[in-house]
Length: 167
Image (cartoon, rainbow, N blue to C red; front, side):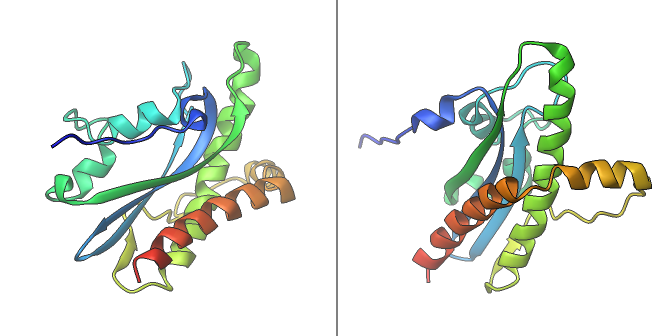
């Protein structure tokens, strides 16, 4: 039997992005919050990151590492882009810092969403347990704009629509 899947053009863009993997099985739902472009060199499209999640290289396969029998789950990705990848290395640092903060914020939002659904858990919950200096906390807060909030809320809404379809 032949199988198909579709790749949206947005999944091919080289952008700093946040995403949520919704992994569903008969036993429940697991959510994984991630980002692309957080390393110093390079920024792969989200479709590349999706593939890495199921790699047999344990360094890259965060979703597969956390789920037993990962082949028995169904997966949906919800994502949005923030910054295009700048070729100029000097501009990348701010993009990396922004996407790191967007991932933290999205993770908090997804945790709040998951609390409202039975048999749903976040595989990598953000704990915020490390000490952050006052000036760094203020700088991070500067990334939390209304526009960024709307983008993240849109991702959360997409995740919620997947969760509602399974009720």
